[in-house]
Length: 436
Image 1 (tube, rainbow, N blue to C red):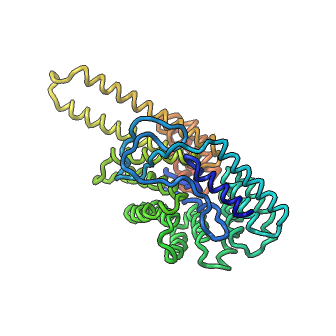
Image 2: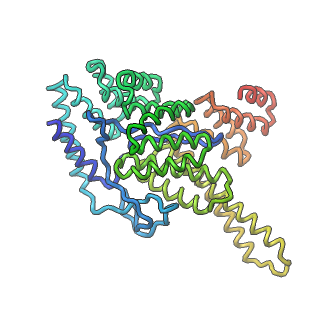
Image 3: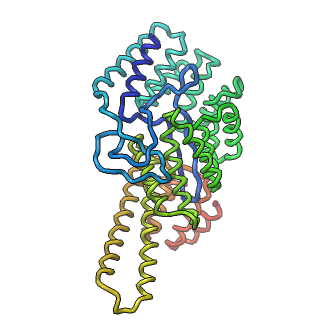
């Protein structure tokens, strides 16, 4: 019965055109800091990832987009022949998928009623609830039975993972510490505990745990992805890129890692843009980041994805303004008789584009805070946006929200201090900058 319930859910998960991702990556910009992937999806008794969405295949150019409704047209090439996906064949009807999930849930509910002393029954039920976007219910199920099965690594790991998703990081740490005391080489616990350390900006300690895991298995894409994030956080782009490459090599064997790796790759490209390295093709970086983020948005929509998209439109606007500046310089060097009205029309079009991209940046940030009001990165980015526009009262309000959510980030205090200073509030400026 347990195997039957699992096969029903595996059928449903693999029949969808796209499936929910297996965790979130937390990325932050203003001060150049970034948190890590929130671990792998809850695992089964073998420690293997049981959530199996549609297998993704890397291609250079495809027609249409994977996921959701079928679309026509041709996609741009992904940066450096990246990982876009071919459109799969005709999907299984949604009512068939829903029936398979309902049947699986029904079988598992009967199993936990009749065999309440079997940890695997509860574990499978909790994973099914999580994968069907009911993490709060899944967490309640695990918390209800965790004390009945002391020493069960899978239950502790899955409960810890769900506690990460609900920002109960202190309790999540305890779950992973219990596992590592019993089993210091438990792969999922090492990866998830490292993710918490990345959230706390303890990059060196996180790399130690990830290194222990990769010594056991160098084909674990989640760990390479988390390692890449730890290097990105400290602007070590060469090491980050090599880790991303390793993650992408092995991601085809772990489809749940695709979302996180694409997201990290996109943020790598955005970080490279901010670094002002002269050897890169900036337009290619922007195009690659856009393709990756759009495919991620189809795979799973989260607040963090909208924050990353807002940074993308900020980068596009900055590159456009840079091009406009260079055009103006070239025109100024020409004789006045060679200037034409078409040049003025071009500049008007460019200004309209810049305004449109600025609005898209704002729209994505508003969407980010609507989806997750605890996302301090979104509030900070909103503050920066209105600071650039000179709307200081709004900038101060948004920076205050970011500071309230995390009082230990120096960069946000500095941003608030700058806003106070420009608004002429010198006493508040002094107080805030002393705190920073």
